[in-house]
Length: 579
Image (tube, rainbow, N blue to C red; front, side, top):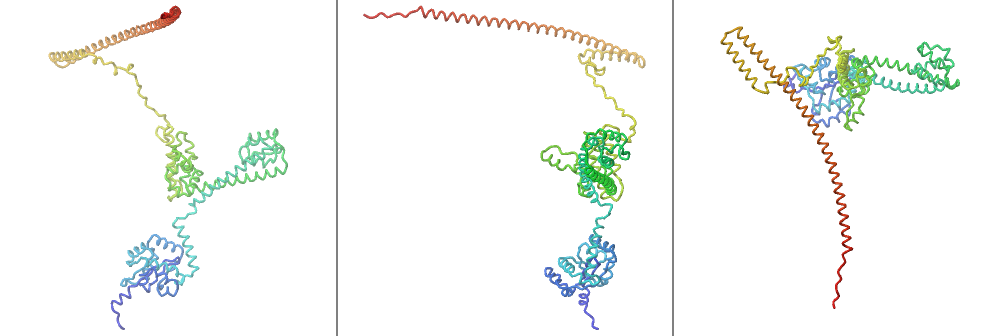
């Protein structure tokens, strides 16, 4: 036999393989014509027919998944760009030995990097490879004979569902959709039940109007009507299983003196049918409430501890899901449900709302009106943490909810001025330190007395001279007790001199105050005298003005008279005619 040249051996050994993932298992194809990858735009035409496809690719190996778990594991690793154990074993078995290096075409660059690191196989990922994968997907059912087309499709659906459950960590106990639907149905039931009960009271009120005030509860009202039918049958009936004793006695007394109209048997039949509806709706609502409470304890235990099952369910329903609520900050949780008021306040530039659905929580209801805003803010912050633990945590019971509720209650006690619960002085009243009494300067003590030395320097000079003399005398006489006695005597003299001067100054101050009082009285009397004199002068001036006016009037009249007299007496001189 003839030996092939080394170049021909290298060309034959270096082939391109294609790794293709199917829902049924791993497939490995060998590419017969690599030149087709250089023109990706014309590659799709090759896969239009099965014959041309088999001329381009050939199935080399196929590994079918044993069960769904293996398929999910492989698909999960493929999505994350990792190499699964089954694929690693498959590639080691079917790729040629280490002496022969093949090129592997893959559909994901991350997967190619993982294969290169683990198995040291060169991988290719480009536009040509993408078009090749697209063509293989079109003809995969005909190329793989180990799995039929129907089997491949059923495996694809099963793998899709399993992978979705795995990625979402699906658990029947963690489905918040049930809570959203249950709280919506609970609200609808409340509306319908209220409508039916009001219609029943209005309808039966024509026959027994006093019963509405005696039995205010809707369920008790319907059960009582169902038991006695008409008011005439009220007295012999026993309502001990429905009503308390005092209410039963009052109802029987009112039935005897009722002012209602009589009703026919047909009317009573229709009223009883409505009673059955009210009773059945009330019982169903109680069952739904128990179901909702249990679901909230399973899905959001920490949130239920903080705000209760009903408010927690409303928050989850308003946000859309538990995960959506966990993504919201505490400020959004605080005003969740008050969006209309928020945007109206922002538009009008008014104060924004302080709370939304969280207002109905028991902790906010217990707070004083002036503290409701602060408590709702603190509660919203703790609720945001609790929701995140419920949505993303692994525990099934309340973990941080209990401690967070205690912190909110302690904050409420602090705002109300009470001692925080659990403190050492909880049972003992708070001993507040007495505030210092603020005294006026005039009523001050000796520490804030009048400084005598500030008025004159004579006292200070005499005191200094006395001290100098005492010091000199002490030095001359000697040391010890005699010097101390001399200093004490000098100090007493100085103190007595200060006291005498303070007494003199106080007396002078009292004399000054007396003089000031006398001067004030004199000034007051002088002011009053001046006022009296001014009044008299004003009167005199008024009188003088009046006299002057009368004199002026008289003088004017005299002038007028004189003018008239002059005009009458004086006649014009007649001119003598000329001759």
